[in-house]
Image (cartoon, rainbow, N blue to C red; front, side, top):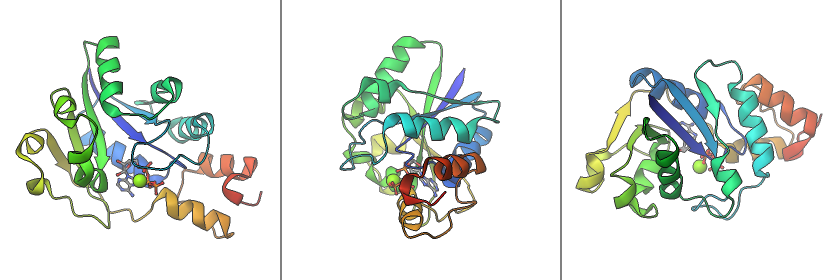
Length: 196
Ligand code: ATP
Ligand code: MG
């Protein structure tokens, strides 16, 4: 089975993540996409909300998609979430699957600095989707990465979780930036300072 892994902090999950996953699924005939919240992302100080809350929001977001699943492997493992450790584990658990890692262009740019990237690049394909603010520049990557990064055209979504957190905190609307079920979840639990 061809499986896409959509990794992220998902703090909160928003329509940019959803559309990136759906675009990659369709373009590369992925049978499933597994949404995987990280525990502590390597490139950030800390995730704001707990892994449990970010998993619940993710589960709410994808509930009605027949090919989308959540994956709690990084939240369960704890510590800093290095993709290379995760993919190693997933390949052991599912030797029959082919894994593709789905990332936005900001992460494509950052790929050369990922932990043990040479090792990881032997195990997965990366599907890079362009995102406003960073150019999707495969040609600027080192040769060994150019061979494993593919792309797909995606409508540009200029939305980030950071912006959503800021908007919620100042009382601005985040409706339609996140899936309805996620909006309800955030409102109900009063997280990010959003008033119920
Ligand atoms: P934050 O602002 O907290 O960093 P974020 O919006 O960047 O949040 P992440 O959880 O960091 O979201 O991103 C997870 C993955 O989704 C990354 O590979 C990122 O590039 C990709 N991604 C996030 N937002 C978009 C978007 N609007 N369009 C395309 N890809 C996106
Ligand atoms: Mg980010």
